[in-house]
Length: 277
Ligand code: PLP
Image (tube, rainbow, N blue to C red; front, side, top):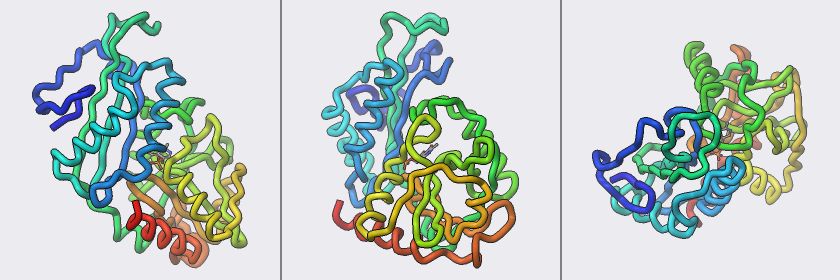
């Protein structure tokens, strides 16, 4: 079943107009959420971010956040997805094609749940990444459907046998194509500050919280590609990847090439918290 505005319907019963602005302009926002043991990880934070992003673009949500929360739980129950992922998006809806924002259009929400195993093996062993220029727009804080900058970066990584592309603007590391990036240097965590250049990941916020609890200092300050390559440990975070160790960057190992100690500790806290959602 598909969540279609405020109802669960069969996939074939969803009707999206060819002039839907999500389809023609990427005019919409989306969220990806993880389901663990029939509970949605940090649902409130995802709904708050959705609300912020929609508001930034002047998109009115077709349902209230409370209704959406109920519907998402209904969806995972109906689909029997106890562990997996939820995807949903809201577009501005259909209107005669024109760049200008239509005075009235009915926004459209579609969403679905899928079973997807956690990337356990990768989390255990670590992954390799490439670095590439960040060619995205300057409102990366909005989780917009326009993803071509990320699509091209991730494709480039895959073509080089890497798991993710780490983006930089003029040598300053921003984030991954679909993840946030952290490094560990001399026992401190470093990550790019929030603002228009990165998406403030829900996992990023969770990891900063966990680090604070472990009394690990977190520096939310820009750092260079050079610093990235000299880091003691590197990991990325995202809903799908949780805390994912990076052991190789542009073909060179990170430090000893083994998953670092702080990364492991944060993975353990993350795991422990899943039992108390
Ligand atoms: N940064 C970008 C560009 C992303 O696309 C994502 C997730 O898709 C993230 C960061 C991580 O966000 P979250 O932890 O909310 O999944």
